[in-house]
Image 1 (cartoon, helix red, strand yellow):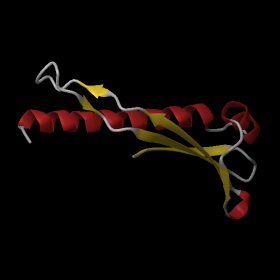
Image 2 (cartoon, rainbow, N blue to C red):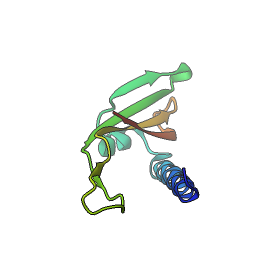
Image 3 (cartoon, rainbow, N blue to C red):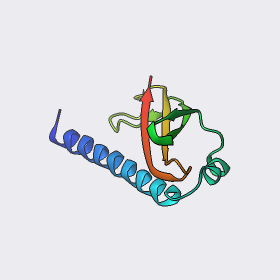
Length: 114
């Protein structure tokens, strides 16, 4: 792997990391202190709910999106065809609610499955 490829790979990883942190920070800002009713008005019914001790719980929302293969320009020859693989993007939002039903924390996870 050439030095330019390593730099590109590092930069892409850094961008994904920063985007994930930005989404996490925005979710906390938008939902912390909201009631369960306000959460359900914007997010709908949770995919699943985990109960914790002391009347606390986690509302989990899972959203999946199928991503088709996308053409990638290799820059080598005009007729080279290179495509990204078909994947499924899975986003998981976890809202931690206290015993009064108020959002205390939010966690965001994203994965890609083939």
